[in-house]
Structure formats: C-alpha cells, structure tokens
Image 1: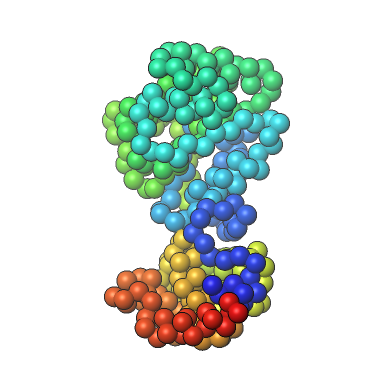
Image 2: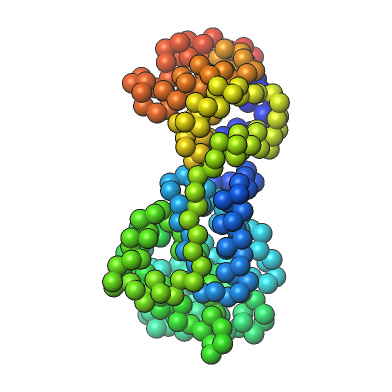
Length: 291
C-alpha cells in the first residue's frame, strides 16, 4: 500500500521468515558460527534457543541455504504435531527416501543405509527440528534414537533442535537426560541492542529497494526500540504500521509521534486498531495512488 509512495519494490517489514532479509547482528553471527562449527565438526546435537520473533527460523533457513549442496544433505522439519512414526516418515521423505512404510524398524534401516552412503561419499547430513519445544516426549526420544545411527568414529547425522526458551525446560526433564547429555553445542539467541535495531531497519529498507526514501527520526527509533526490545518480528510489525501512517500523511520522515501512534495501534493500546484518522487518510490517498 505504501510501497509506491516510498519507492519500495516490496514491503520491507513483512514477518515471513525470508532468508534474503536476514540481518546479521552480532548475536546472529555468533549463532551462525555455532551452527557452522557443529556441522563441520560433526558434533551430533545442537541446541538453538531464543524468544519468539528473534529470527531463529530465518537464521536456520539461511544457514541451510548457504551450506555447500555438494557436500551436505539437509532437511528442515517444522511441524511439532508429529507422532514418532510420522517423524520418521517426514525425515525419510525430506531426504528423498522410502517413507510409506508403517514399520519404524524398516524406516530406520532405510535411513541408516542412506547415512552410511553419504558418509562414504564424504557428505554431512543435517536435520533441523524447528519449534522443538512443542515436540512430544516420544518424538524427542525417537530423535535420540536417530542420533544413535553412527560409526565407531563419527556421528552420521547432525541434528539441530531449535525452539523457544521452554525447550530448555523440556530437555531438563529426567526422562530426557540421555538426549540432553548428548547436546554438545548450545546457543541462546538474544534480541538486538539499540544500535543494531537501527541498522536492522536501514538494512531491510535498503534490500526492499529504497534506502533513503523513508527515514525514522531519533525519537521514532526510541519508541520502536522501547516497544520491541530489539525483537526483529516486533520491529517489523511496528515499522510497517509507522510507514503506513507516514504514507497517509505523505511524510518521508517517520516522526516520534507517528511511531508512538504505531506502537499504540499494534500494541493493543488503541482498541479500534487503525485509528479513524488513519482510515480517513487511507480512503483519501488510495484513489490517487491507484489511478
């Protein structure tokens, strides 16, 4: 809606996990380094945690996309509502293997043969389980059994468990101590600081096609950071609304008052969503920009 006014090719602040928009803050670089180290050194299990909206899924997709496709075989499972049998089927399907069997033993045998074949070819196999805090106990136990597929010297599959901080509580249960003890690389992804948040906003606008078409004032940045706490998803939500408000006022600079209004609307302090003033301005502006 506001893209034409500001000159963006696409909306800079969508909340869809798009690897192309990944901003490598210091925390994201450290998390990426931990993932790369774990895979390169065949660490076996990796744990990546972070609050909702901190960019875990975007980081994981970027990581998998950047792995050398000749030297790696990868799979991303992000459905937490699986049974242990459905997990095995999903894993085999992602790797292009036989998956229709109802036998866990057969599915594991097929997977083991594939892993040994990839090991012989010099390839690493990576399995990422996203939203792992929601996985049932029996599924986490099945993941541990998959990790048992190994040679005398090497792990045949590198497994990344990614999830919200609740994952730490889940893995801390006595019943899962065997799995928890096998995790050799752990990283907790923290929100961005104020300077990184500012750079993040500029980064996304530049990638969307027009770095200087819109500018957030210092006061606006303070409102955005205070509301979001440096969580990328919340930054996206409030910046998107602030640009919409700026569009209705035909303003290239997002002021502190515009950002405060955006925060009130997306933060639930405005009971009517878009204010009547913004709705009226949208009604006036849309015919001009569609003609």
